[in-house]
Structure formats: C-alpha cells, structure tokens
Length: 288
Image (cartoon, rainbow, N blue to C red; front, side, top):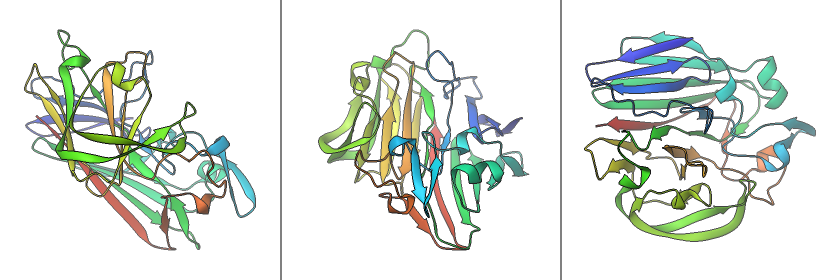
C-alpha cells in the first residue's frame, strides 16, 4: 500500500513494503529519489536490518542452529504496519513473526519513523528487544538519489562534499562484497563523481570527522544533504553498469569480513541489545 506525507516544500511517497521511500518530490516537481528501474536496481531507499551487507556463506549460527540470511537482511522485503500518520509524519512497525524467526530467532519490533519539516526529512529507527535474552543486529539506510537530476546533465557534473576535509581510511571489499581486512587511504573533502569512481564497487568510510555529506552539481543549485551523525560507517555506491543514481548509506555495522566468525553473537561491530531494552538512531536529509 502507498502512503504520502507532505508540506509546502516536499511530498514524500512511501510503501508499506519495506517501509521504503519511493519518491521525494519538490513543489516544482523535481524528484530527488531514484525511481527503481529494474534495469539497474529495482529499489529506492531500502532499510537494512538485521544485517548490513552479507554474512559469510549466506548463513550464521546461533545457539547451535544454522539460519539463512540474504544480503542486507529481511526488513527491506517485509510488509510493515502503519502505527501512526499525520500530514507530515508517518510511523511504520515490523514485529517478529513466523517468517522472521526462520531467519532471525529473536522477538523484536522495528519502528521506522519519517518526519518532514520544511525541506528536511528525518528518518528514525527504533529496535526494541522483546526477547528474554540479548539480541544483536546491524542497521542502516540505503537511499538512492538521482544523479543526474536533469536530462541535459551527466553524473560527471556532480560531486559529493563533506562538512570538512577528511583524512581517514576506507574498508576494502572483495568481489563477493565482503571486507578483505585491508584498508585504503581516503583524503578529500570533495569526491568528483564518475563511472570510473564506482568501478571497484562500494566505498566504505569510517572514523569520519564530518557529520554531513552533500550531493551537489556544478550545473544546478539543487542539493541533497545527509546528516549521518552517530553512524560510524558510510557507504557510497552506484552500479558499475551505468545507473544514473548514487547511494549514500549511513550504517551501524557492515558486511562480514572474509574470515568472520559464523556465530551471530561474535559478529564485529554489531549492536548488542539487552532484554527489554530499545535502541534508537536517526539520520536526516535536506533537499534544496
């Protein structure tokens, strides 16, 4: 089912399938969000839960049982319920059920709340542990933005700009989209975008000083600014087959290392949440 929230500046279209945004349109009719053409990638802005990326071999072990879990987890393919909606806010919820327990043997609820104020959209996540034991998980966003925005432009007319100059490390990935354990150097405030930039797959950055990153153009005044404060990892990705969009992905957690333990509770950089406790995080997008 399709839902909308809006104000005088923006209109956001969302689906209960994955609690996913499908359009972000300005009052002038400019859609910032990728439209999901299956030729390149049939998603728009999926929510990643209870993993980000992959677990080695596509499965893990918990308390002696083996569970299959596909890339980025099951939230993006689950149907959420709408808990609450006003003109400019909407809250979705996914609760553990028979299907989730087949892949993730815990009792939980996952809430995703979208709140629109002016040209800013806040996306909040809340995970509640309803189990009698500690649960662990990773969580993150995967929004894709049209790049270019207009037909007379190319991706090469765009760039990403951090709040401040960065000098940090990137986590190298294998062809199987696992972490190799090797680190690369990253030193920049601006990243010029091009097909060449994405030839080696996703860029995963960590220990960033900046709280925000913006997608900007040399040819128009539109921009998308993401505040990812509190998210220790940031992914930047576009398919190498020439898709006209770029994903900016705030993560808590990441894809497995090639030599990762297959025991779920031993996964590196996962969130561990005690019984009956809740975890909250939020990122925001400003469209100009």
